[in-house]
Length: 54
Image (cartoon, rainbow, N blue to C red; front, side, top):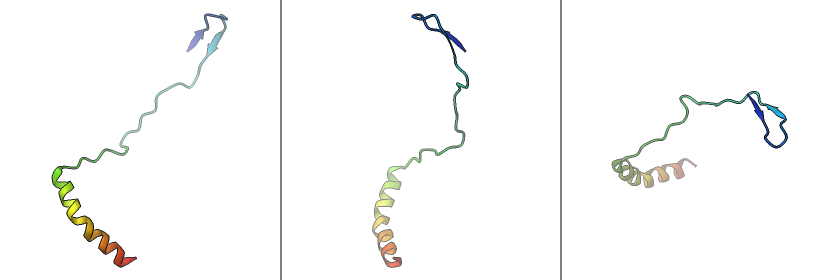
């Protein structure tokens, strides 16, 4: 790509410009209301078991 600066008329050369795409990266996890309720009920048990094993 070759650009000309209007104020100085000096050409500017640009190389290596491109786009980077990540395929198969992290995806957003969707939680339902059911998942939220189940997780809130399970949370105290998970905390208790992690305290036992520590």
